[in-house]
Structure formats: C-alpha cells, structure tokens
Length: 154
Image (cartoon, helix red, strand yellow):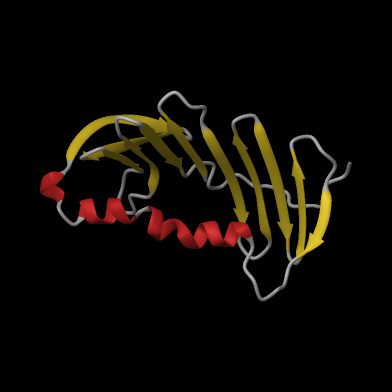
C-alpha cells in the first residue's frame, strides 16, 4: 500500500508499506527530505534514517508490528468510501484508469474518487481526496508481488 499526502505548496509525504501476513513488513517513509525505513520480522525490528546504518531492536511479541497496525487501519481509512457506497445516488462515474495492468472503474462522491477492479469482487485499488489545500492518494498496488523479508546487511 502506498499512501501519498500533499499540501498546497508543500512536498509530498509518502509511506510505502509491504506487508507479508504472519511474517512481517517492510515500510519506507519520506517527507521533506527526511526518509526512514523499517523492516519487521517476527520480534526483530530493523530501522534506519536516510542512509544511516541499520539499528536492530526487538519488540514485545504481544504488540503488533507497524505493518499489522496499518493493515488493521484499512477499514477506518476507507470509511468515507463505505459511507458514499451506502448512498449510490450521490456517486458519479469517472473515466477508468489502469492500475497494475488492470483497467479499474472509478466513482466520484464529493471530493473523493475511488477506483475498483472490475467484476463481482470489485477490490478497492485507489482512492483520492482533493481539497483546496491538500491532496491525499492511497494506492493498493502490487498485491501479488512477492517480497523477501530478511535482516538487512550494511
């Protein structure tokens, strides 16, 4: 999942999270020239700021990883879309776009646009919310792209 937030005149803030169910996550964050990377594998957490060396730490197994927290937050992030879908008369169809090689249909409701895969499942792939001062885009992409979670080497 890639979450991009921009404010009028500001640089974008990007969070790119790759989550492997039951194994861990790899997250990269970038904002205003600052970057951070975190790899969680079980109880091990590897972090670094920018190009600095990796630091190793441990987490309490009873606590969820950052990646798990992000996955659990998805329904809350999508709540405005669920509310719009409950009132289909307020939605307008927008031009389809291609995401990961799949042509996705889109609907607009107020300042929000959401794109879904075709078919009965209609998976949410992107939503955007644009106001006069900000633009937020959340992409749910590369769903089947495998990632390798392993401790980083410096």
